[in-house]
Length: 463
Image (cartoon, rainbow, N blue to C red):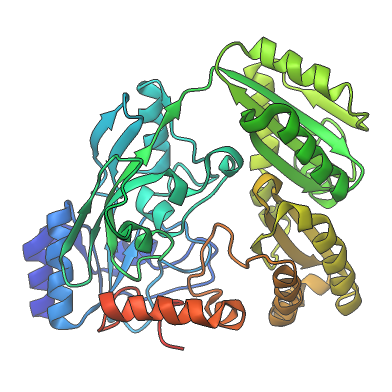
């Protein structure tokens, strides 16, 4: 151990090798406080070359590595185990802007840069980087890539996979994959960078990325609308798409229990409470007033129960704050069994009805909090019980999950839309994923990481 720590210090500097419990503590507990680990040490490299040297050393010494970005994983993907034998490589020092090309609408940044900093760099260049998450002030680009993050604007711009042009990745043996091209079209063989997007650090360690930028929208039209059912919400989504095309940037839904929670903890801020609330936003170049008037005129033809339009940027931010407060508001209200599911948007109403019926039959005091990105089919479907039964909630977690996931897959959905798999959902992935797909994934893992040293214990590890 002393020799290994000395070797680590020789690569990154003694001040960037953390071993004392008070220093390593921020890196050992996951965001939801479900997983607590004990690392061999935490190292903070400052360059791709240092990451490569670290992985070569770890391969030689057969030391397992846990890559970590902003430590905002909700599935324990970036948490070490409790053996004291896994090395956490935290990426916050590798955070530089390498290049920005406004003519090509691309930007190259290092993996430890936070999403908020990247967004600001884009704005300063008169461009938009559209990924938007509640954790954007602390999550890092490497983590966003490793989980194929989605967020609020996937409907128009896509996930991180769609936003990525190139990657730089250090492989488990220390070799560096140099694919930071800003090309939109390249048919020269397999697109191997795609292997590392969504792999949660199990195939290599992403150190930099070339990402797409877009023109900065000058106009927004934002509305908070009430509808009387989830089917009416999906019908509204289809109608908005037909009327406005790709100017429809965001379409969020919240059930009535969500709205009631917001009213409880943020009284007087909701414009109204309806069976379902929709937050819809259009964006475009040009003038906001013109876009807002187009939306107002169109909404007047729809015969909706209720609705308000943001007439200023302050109004817009107030509506967005209500949506962004949802997760934290539910956390304040107590624990819940959380699901980050994806469905075809057209299947959402049937799923919601069938799942509510099945859960209520099995657990009579169930309370369902359903909200999320209906425009791309991603729902946050969270389960709790009415008090005092909620104290025993997690005793039923496996049974609840089986009901939810069985129905998700019956509707051709997925159990992980944007948060990844990590430690939390690995056994469920084995149950529902196509066996041939799993076999291919494990074959790629064996090819790139035959010693199984990259983020072991997660979903690509042997069952």
